Image (cartoon, rainbow, N blue to C red; front, side, top):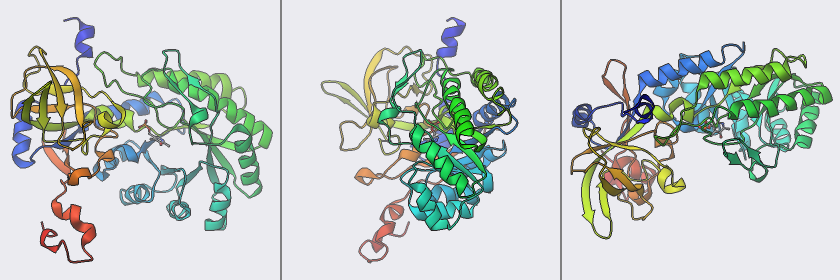
Length: 431
Ligand SMILES: *Cc1c(COP(=O)(O)O)cnc(C)c1O
């Protein structure tokens, strides 16, 4: 095997023996997170942007809303990026406050602006009409405000990745953001930021530098035309991870350097050399450092070969929702030839409840543990309760090899809890 092939091989961060041991205490399925990997990556992100004095990563809470994870990231001076009331509450409870919280929501209920403001969060306005809403609920404006930008049209990178900002619901047009800055400035806002999210899961080092170029030019324009004091540019999320083994991972150090280059080309000559760079990565911060571990409990031979697991799309929705690829390692069979072809399924009464379709795997035996890779972001958090399925536990693999439960599995009593007012389900409301 060449070095490149070895690199491309996706390795599970636990062994079969570990999975068996953990399952004695925590029955499968569970999501497990690799604390060492999370820490090393957070350190690297910090280093990649260390050239920028005000740099901060605001972790997108929606990717992995777990207080234990947020507290680890806080040690690296990360903030949180929130888009809902409960995400703000979790940030607050984990000790984030003031400008360590970014409230990047859209279609925002007015009271949520009030709650964000009470925490001292930076409010990022998705739409020009939100100016009136904020004024109504707060009766004033915070000193610092951010506005979300949407350049419209198509956004394309050289490797063919593209997205269609002109078709997305987010952000303000160039004319609107100019108007928004003018209004906010007239109403006493002193410091400004701009934000844009133009493409998702970009597996290329080119995305952030290209986006930075667009936002930096826009910042210079807004500064010139409105006189606004621009303090930060928020590159938001969108930095991707290699879900497929043949994909080349992003190099965050190269990405940081790429952003620095455009910063020096555009912002520095325009006299904006003290603008802070913010990011709101979710997937890149956690995705590879989480996995869903599930047990093979059924095999079925009809027109195709099926392996049924004890997990389902309620535990990991991405394959059913987007047809997303998640690599699967059969623990203990890492070196066995992948000479069988299976559909790996969950138990929902939905035919799209498949973690993999026509996947080449080693022969799967009942009781084998399947390690479904890259569920650390937008994995557990997209879970739901369809078919009365219960959400799994979340576990943290500590650097010393021990395992900490960071969320317990749901019980039927949790599922029935919203009937606690009527007596009907009382029989099942106790665990
Ligand atoms: C979802 C989201 C993010 C995180 O996106 P990733 O692709 O996970 O990096 C960041 N900011 C906003 C506003 C988002 O909606």
